[in-house]
Length: 434
Image (cartoon, rainbow, N blue to C red):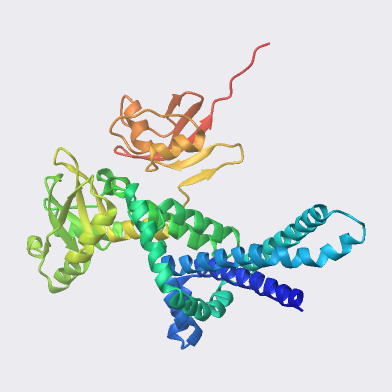
């Protein structure tokens, strides 16, 4: 009868060990945000689970205490109980008591270890990982009760642990307070994409958001040469004709040159003045414009746009000259990608031809071209491939003009006197003479 009681105790201890292992893995893996949602939906079990995941350090210590007690109990009760089953069998072989006890102990140790590892560790751990939410909900209430019953012991153990860690110079941080780094979040998002939990667009958004804080306005600005500006020296009718051609909403206003920008004009103000027949006082509709340094991050510029309720800023270089401009649309495109409105000319910035050559936009960054064709293009104070080619020429660019660099030819396909707009990048084929 005593053997049967001991065997029952063994199974209870294995179950106890499995319970605490399952609880430990489940509360660590379950998402707190999901539990908070279930609480809002009125799930009673979720309230207990939220209490546990909100104080992980304490309840994980309770799990460890439960696992330790169960393991010690198995060693104390389990091995003698199992050994007692085999000892009568070995006495039939006329073996010495020492031999019988040793063999029985080895068999009992093997069986208890197998039960402990398989049923007390591996199975509950796997179940908790597969169904963490459900397991966490089932185990939270008993775990809270166990924690309350053993609180004095837990308090003593936790304070002893913290004191030892402080002796080694470590600060105590709760597990749930440890934040993920940018790289860890990127890895999590990429894994979610690989397993089909998010789509390609969502993955791109997340990647762009992390790159967002690292970029400066210089990297996304519309270059000075591409800025569509209204000059005070032009007549009112010339300005109207210019806006009809450009199809934009806001225009910087310059006096003499683009280095002397005095504000901007909104298209609705310009056309309102035209309708009213007031064609003489253009300066009266000029609005104040924001000036920012080219080293400013785009995240900081976005804060300025939101705070001051503006949508355009002029970028100033280190010498105080105009480097370019940035609009709220340029910033938004860094997250969601290129936005085409009804007036934009649609076209690819990089297009690969059938022979392996590339047709690229002149405003593409040099570093992107270097990565594309796997060569290092050296440049100082020049950001775009069009600007770099311009710097290699001795005069104004001409269509079909070529610049050779390493194993590639850069052929101008489209340009004007001020800017190279389209370029053909072609690998130079070298003749091999036998």
